[in-house]
Length: 362
Image (cartoon, rainbow, N blue to C red; front, side, top):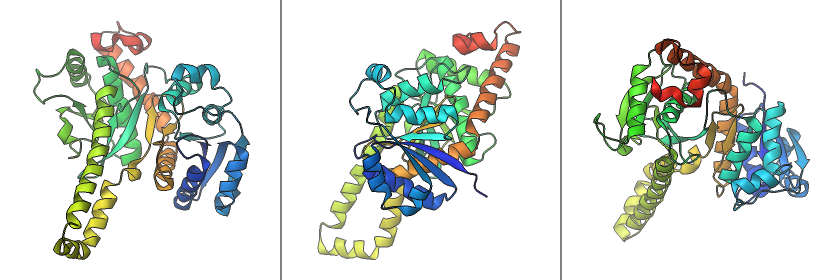
């Protein structure tokens, strides 16, 4: 049986607010009938949207707040003025145990800053990352970091590998997920110093809960070469936005080609079943939702401009992460890694010190 889980929703986040997010939660409830919800935001608007979805209303509670963090607010401003906002309250619900996960379509920088303050990073993790599901020829991969941090040290890239592997075990049910480190080539001598140092560390530490495959290039993400692709946030975010834009570009080209003449329209009519399958595979809404990995609680960031279908995907992801026991798995992996690291150095590096930046010194 599906386990009972409660999802806290920042109902005022994103471009559309409750009028899109509530129907999205209703779609997710159809797939996961054991879900319950707490909506934070303008009670009048939320209740109006819930009135259209009686089944969802019966499994929901609304907490009113007039305080909203805008999409343009700086993270520092959100930290100073955000307490009591719909975003802040949804994360506090996870911290207090009222909810098992929080989902927001709001300001990414503000969400990361508040999540770090409210939920706190797991011991041994200096900088949480945003992990995204990525459609591939084979199935799906996990890519992180896709924008939480600009730049990453060898230490951080190594921890990203552990975090991504924990998420892959939770979602893909693979005991030793394959992990690749994004680089400009697969040769040992290529890449900047941090990437090469992370590569050396991942190869040197024994008994990691993952199968490290070495360097991968950008074109291998879509091929599904590995279960987890590790990349620093600047390049990861560019790769993500480029892939989304390319999918839309191909869709536009295909539509124009199929309507360019009578014969192409006739061919499109016969091939409409195949085009429908292609559209579904290329639809970014299916994998909408980035997880903030490395925190003592589950927070999922939905795309701000998504529709109800896309938001439902983010809620589904939050449920899967909560149901899998991800936080406990990840905490155990990080703790075990630090102990192995300390043993490999002859006991000279404590887990606490390695968590603060000594990983690459072994």
